[in-house]
Length: 137
Length: 137
Length: 137
Length: 137
Image 1 (tube, rainbow over the protein chains, first blue to last red):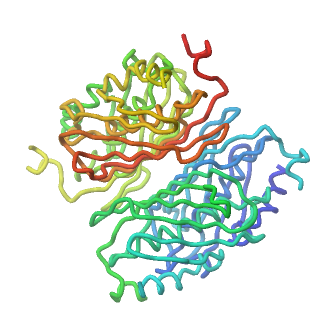
Image 2 (cartoon, rainbow over the protein chains, first blue to last red):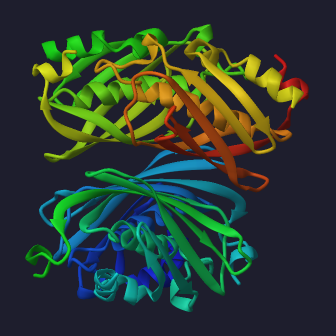
């Protein structure tokens, strides 16, 4: 998983948002967001796009935990519970994988272990593999 | 639209990401993201979650352009074209509205007017209205 | 679950398609489709809409296993594996529920226990309850 | 569009449901469902899966109006208005297309021209083309 660790380090948007990757294994990942003021929306609850960003890192890391480069083509998120402070944890796993496409399911929970959102994502798996020069630019 | 302008000003996450609201009218909105380094992912293209955040502001503003407070319950995004610089514009409109639920369709385009992503969102419309004390806390 | 059994018996479209309900409990359901010629599409694999119909019965039954009438407001389905004969089984469970909205996750598998599709659905929960005159017409 | 007409004729599920194709052109299609008893659900409104089937034919025909065989990989449908009689019309168009993937947007309306549902679908485009022996079996 050395590649993934590199992959995550270079994810400037996730860093900007303040997302922390906790765990990675083949087809799985887990990440954390400590809620701060800049994650809130105009009614002072955590912004849907901040929750999406947390789930999206898990999605990206889980789908890129194999050799091939995976790019997101679709994501569907349902928002279940509003939160305004504390910590959010997103945990995701591979639902299916074939040479071209793979699907992931990610659950986002709050400190009480209540479900905050559910996220389903699909990636297109490129032929290019990590470690090739193509993505080192 | 004085309420919306207030609504947008208080959206701390959109400000943190660097999204600028351009236009609002009943059921419609338009916003802009000037791509900077912190919007990129680990393969140096604009992060899916940054594109989502841009679309999500349009979704939030368009759905909250009426009297009632609207909260996002579902969003579905398909990513079409990878971009790494320039400006992104998201434009959205109301597809349907009833007293409880409303649907929105948002298109995100790059400087060449190419479609970068399409976003569909559904909100639940609360009974609370803007300007009431409920949301001033 | 007498109500549900009644509910299912009156579902004329599911009957027309040939779907059989196998199990129901609070927030959960399981159904079966024996693939016949009229379920195929023009390239002789099971039609996506037939798979959707199978998942949708599970969704409808699981979401209507409580007292309140639930109506589908959104469904998202990802198609994973093509099949052309045998039996399909859909099994679903409640992911979240509050007084107004509930979410369901349904997996559709073939005889080899391979995942054929994944389905996520959201319902709006009405105030009307089963057994009231409203739905007896 | 001779190929499409053949394609549609062989779609046994659409025929079983009672869907009629009205128009096809490159990336676009239009179809009709005359609501009958077997399209209703247990509360006597048109079944969500029947509406999906109508939209899905438009999706299949529009996405297969080009040379390559397209297979559905994701569909997202939002249900807006309940109907119980009359005619439904679904009309769809291509939102994006590249050599591997394409996206479609389909609107389903009733006789009053009211929106009944909106459907977004994504296909994977195979290398195989129509007219080749591969799909003639």
